[in-house]
Length: 118
Image 1 (cartoon, rainbow, N blue to C red):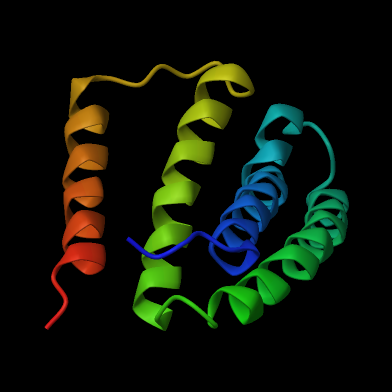
Image 2: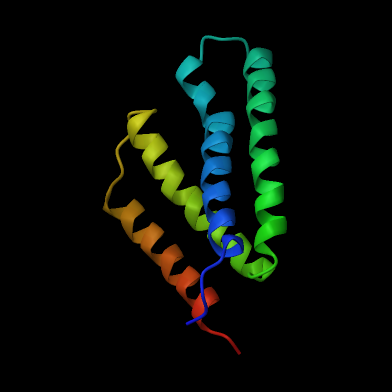
């Protein structure tokens, strides 16, 4: 097994952070539906700037050790994990068995992306 380097770990940490910003940018305004839509858009774009400031370098750094398919798969799995926590703790929505099965199937797909080297 190859040694883990900063290029292996740093992109994962940065993608987690970027997804937290992006999830708030996309869905955080749903807790403030009485605010004007233009305010939600401006706030969302402002938050999304930080997401891009993390995601772009995460992908640049990660491309030294991961393929683009692996980076995208990582990002999607991280997005689901962040979104699940966000929907439960921020939006106060529950996750059900069908969500768990759907997420598990996506995780199974991620397994194949990382382990089916051909």
